Image (cartoon, rainbow, N blue to C red; front, side, top):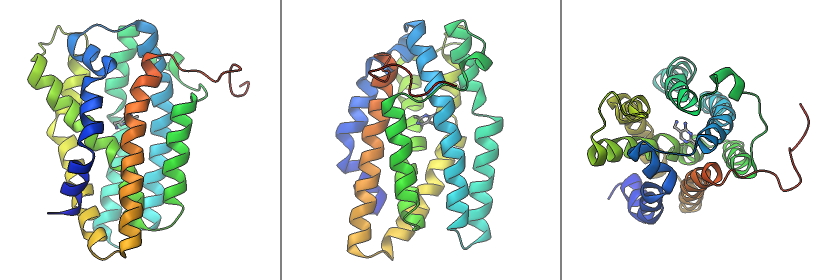
Length: 228
Ligand SMILES: Cc1ncc(CN)c(N)n1
């Protein structure tokens, strides 16, 4: 069994909990509290900014043109395309997208960012990919699952969000990162493979926690982290 098949099997519990989470179900049903959606977009805008810098770190750890091109294209994809699902959610929340940018991350998102950054600074491309992969992988599966279960039509409030993540381009991104992780895991030491598994599971858990953070409007207990 390939390394990524093992990862998927070992994390089935978290994937299922993500599909069943009320925020994800609400996306499928087309009904969510507007404040929760706005909370998600605020945190996700900053999360994706971090993710962009992680692609930069991955480039610095790459030794082939193919990998560099892939990560470079992903930066362009996040900047140019992944704004569409955010705009869909901002429209639903009734707040201009531009007004949902520049907020401090709530604790869970902040922890997710710190986790990915700390794994990436260990300097091994396989570990960096392991920490990043749950991001495209869980959304690829969420998009397909919601499309299959709810068959949304264009008048569904989250039609564009669901179509975006159910699209084959997300599956292609996930597929490339899976292939590269399988290759890197094959030549990694048992200890590094164990760390890759640990990094992957923690990111899966933090994907689930991110939905809960949004749904519960999680904030820092003593107010905003810092004034801006
Ligand atoms: C937290 C999170 N995870 C994944 C994705 C999909 N790129 C996202 N936008 N936000």
